[in-house]
Length: 282
Image 1 (cartoon, helix red, strand yellow):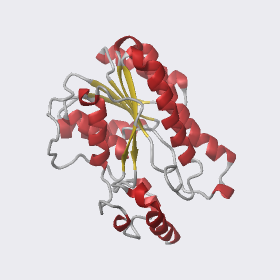
Image 2: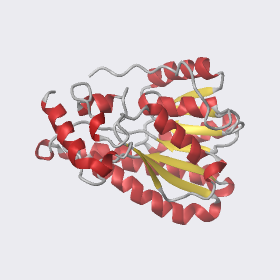
Image 3: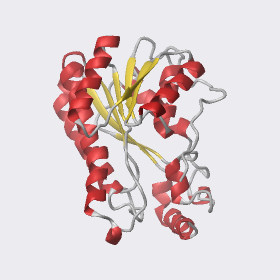
Image 4: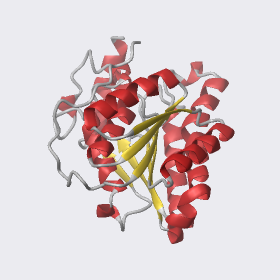
C-alpha cells in the first residue's frame, strides 16, 4: 500500500500561545511520516526545535525540509533504528552536542500490519514488540540517562486504543505491544518523577490521512457514524494533545494515557462491526 503523502498544514489556528514551546528541543521518533510528521510540525509551530528520526534517512531528510519550510523552525533529521541501542545512544549524543539539551521526547516509532492471530508468525510478533515496546524503552532510557535524570523533561508515548474495551481484530501483535507501553509508562512515571520527568501516553483511535486508517478500511466504509463525536480524528487532534503534554500546562500530569478517539471506545461494538465490514471489502 502506498504511503499517505506528508505535507504541512495549509493553515493553523492556535489554541495555545505560538511561543508556548519557544527555546525547547524535541526528539520525535518516527517523525518522518504520518502522525509523527504532524506532531513535529505542531511542536515547531509553537517555537520548538525538533529532531526527527527514522530508519529511512531519505524520508526524514525530505520531511525535515518540508517542516522547516512550513514552520520556519529548525528540524534535524537522523537515521536511527529504535531497536539498536548503539544507534539510539549515538543519536542522543549527537542531539546534545548540537542543541545542548532535550526537553521533550515523543516515542512514535511503530510497526504494524493486519494479520489474523493464527497466521501471525513468531518473528512478526517479535518484530512489533521490538519496535514498539522495546524501542520506546531504549530511547526513553538513553534520553533519561544522558539528560532527563539531571534536568527533567517530558516523555510522551504514542500508543493506541487497540486493546481498550473490545479488542480490535487482526491486531494480536500491535494491541499487546501498545498495552505494554502504557503499563511501562506508569512504572517510569513512578521511578523518574522525583527527577522532574513526566511520562504520559497519547492513545489515538482511527485517524484519517494515515496508512493505518486506510488499512482499517476507512476508504470503503464510513466509520464516523459509530463514533459519538461523529467524525474521524485528524493528525492535528493527536498533535495538539502532544503539545499540551509537552508544555507546562500539564506540569502536574504524569502516568496517564489521554485517549484521542472521539469516544469510539465507548461504542466499540458498532465501531468494530463497521470496521469488520470494511476489512471484508479489502
